[in-house]
Length: 97
Image (cartoon, rainbow, N blue to C red; front, side):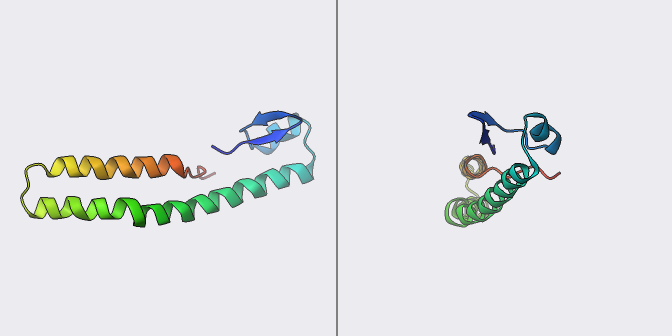
């Protein structure tokens, strides 16, 4: 979750109304919003890299086990899904507004 510090306090609400109410000026608000956008874009790229490096091989292994008729293939699916959840938690994306 994105957070910023203003006057020694940490906040996560990035709505313009909230930031105005805590005393931020337009320049400070734009700075916070720019930083939030930058971090969000970085997380998209980092998440894509992590998927390729960490979860895609697990997905391929799961698919192979299904095709091989392995009755334990569901456990491979669980490992893959856990890795995807871990990556999403590591690189959170900002909700669409």
